[in-house]
Image (cartoon, helix red, strand yellow):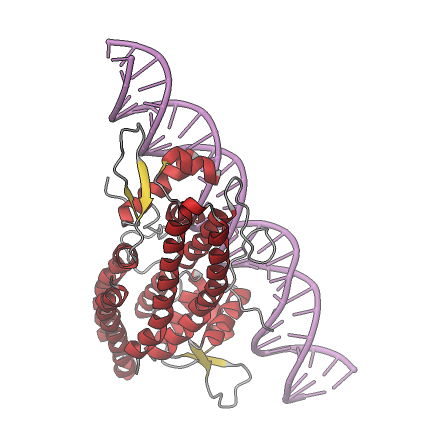
Length: 179
Length: 179
DNA sequence: CTGTGTGTTCAAGAATTTTTGAACTTTTGA
DNA sequence: TCAAAAGTTCAAAAATTCTTGAACACACAG
């Protein structure tokens, strides 16, 4: 009994963590794309987002939407959505375009910018809604049978502590990753 | 254009973040379960795992597998798998059973234990495999066209830095959450 | 204007993940 | 030793999430 449920996301196909399923990419690109696909999974983002970021990260010059779609062999739709998401997060930016028709994107490579973008987008909202939830819990505890009220109040308070810790951690994290 | 792709996991059904879909649970329990279901989604765990932990967290006394399954209205199979996972992670433990036939579970409520269990299970492995990946990337950069080699080497080095930062962060995180 | 190159949107299909339920194993108490 | 209770497993079904592709906008050069 060594396999632990839910801990392994089956990386479809390719044997033994070798650069997978990537068509017209140079080996280095394939490897980079693969790395970021893995990272994406960890933080719960779609594979395509990882692919796109990986390709831009390792690309020496900025790429257009079409270039991205073609080289990764994904649809224009996916590329568009993925790029939009990455832009909104601050993980990539529009490159200064020297007289070309299409927009070109390049990766933001500062860990701080990346991480803080991600944390702000994905974590902060949850912390805020947590606030309300805690309030509701406290109200409900007040209505609970008197016998249990004390224990329950303690539990809910502890949740409050968690919340504070988490909230306090965000800035700390960002600082640690800084520059 | 306010909606950001991928940022909203559609919480099936119930209007406006009110305690959802939970059958025979007291309002307080429902609310707690709901809170942990949300948390589970954030960290990428199945809903059932969140439900189970939530119920145990708010439960004044330890619960059996059957009790969990019945009260949450999930199958025995799910309950078994979820409990197993939570145990393996250290998020719950077997309660001392005073002469009852079945095993009873109770939630571990220490944030530190929880978080470090989670980090060790879900994050650490990725950091380790990252090691190898970096090695492979460096080798591939060496083979790249000389014109690009310098830029590429810089990028890959930066990834190395990321990796170090992340690795250094883990213990720091755990300490911060500590007791 | 109009035709072409770029980019976005979104419903339908594909892929993935989670849950179920029934068969099976283990444990317990008599 | 046996029957019932408790718990586990895993293939198939259900639910969810991601991707595609075609229809739609928009800008701009001719």
